[in-house]
Image 1 (cartoon, rainbow, N blue to C red):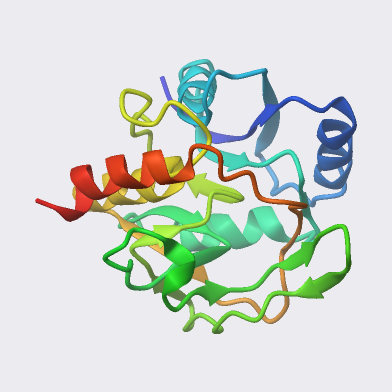
Image 2: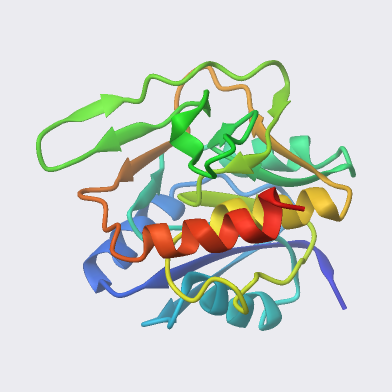
Length: 218
């Protein structure tokens, strides 16, 4: 049975230091009265989709916050903000960054993106220059996997995506197929820091082809 007063943070992790730092930021969040918070870490997941499916099935929390181990929440009111958005039953998933219109090539960042985050790499730290979402939120066709917040459970497509790319665009499309809105909220200032370092695109173009065949060619 679903616990409507429970929020679960879920991450796939392979770095204990990142995991602890991420949880340290979580510990400073204000918790709405009557709600409980749970943390689940999947160690050395074979893929992001399989790890998220494993965690999704092991918690009864209605609200699930899937995030990368290198994402740190700096908005202490974060839980209140997402619950307010989820008062609209039509909203299925929330992201911090998203593409209002997914480019035909399947690559989110080749088109306009909306949202706000603080990005870090080995050179510097900066606020990413995306378009500010509309009030109270903007519907998008895909959100970035750095953080994906849900109030409904839809299986992650581990049958298609067996690595760590395109699971986010895929899950966005699965929610839209199910009739739910995928949104990026309006933010005065960023809610999270993403210490994303250097991108690993080893299997990116393989998964891009799978994404296009499943979601863009039908």
